[in-house]
Length: 325
Ligand SMILES: Nc1nc2c(ncn2[C@@H]2O[C@H](COP(=O)(O)OP(=O)(O)OP(=O)(O)O)[C@@H](O)[C@H]2O)c(=O)[nH]1
Ligand SMILES: [Mg+2]
Image: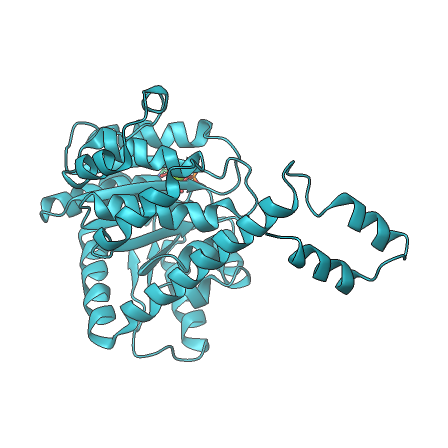
């Protein structure tokens, strides 16, 4: 079921308790509407999150990230099929940190996801930052909470790797899957982007292409050079996502990692880190809103005073914090 929000948003707002009651039954329209409330930063959001908080926390949140065109959407699509075959309900959140509006690339994702469009056990939703500063830092965990409360066993969060964003999304997942592919020196770029520290599972997709073995070898060498992390050895898998090859092994690796997270207590630790990031993002968004109702950034008069040397920046920051309520 494609949980697209357009249209739902214009309907007369049902009460939050009604919405939550329907959402808990897995009603796709309610899921779509709840995620639209997140995206629109609705005034109802606070009540919605309060109602959903005790209902969420069950789902296995899996982040999939990697360079543009590496095969994230194709892999997600194949993985949805694999997880459905194992009896799991699945939520898919395609997050686009680079685009302020839901645009062309995500439309492409929706079309590819059409394989699952009629399946009641699958929710698919794309989400963009809508230009909010740091917006995805609080909106992504909230959308995850909606899907979790709606009963998704596994939530796949696809993000395009653009610099820092994959690291941020990794902080929000229980399990982070890094996708690479041969060509374009991805292995080397990966090392630069700090990808070697954040992956729980590495997948070299497009294994049907020349150079895939080399990418796996490079990855194995580079992962081996880093300091040993905990007692989890990230597997390095090979897939041909467009043909569904190797996807069963990816699903196995996700299940194995979830078991490891639970046995070691690492799952609770990661969830606490995620909650801390979410709280911070909400608090910072609120401070920004209090300072600049017009969205113009730091109060202009203070900025002028600092620029003119009338006020020092620390004193200006004090005034800003004092003025927040
Ligand atoms: N040869 C080959 N092509 C593949 C494979 N997997 C995906 N592709 C193709 O690679 C292209 C990009 O795939 P996507 O799944 O859209 O990649 P993506 O990472 O989601 O792309 P963005 O979301 O735009 O960053 C498509 O044309 C796919 O058909 C594969 O295993 N082998
Ligand atoms: Mg994609």
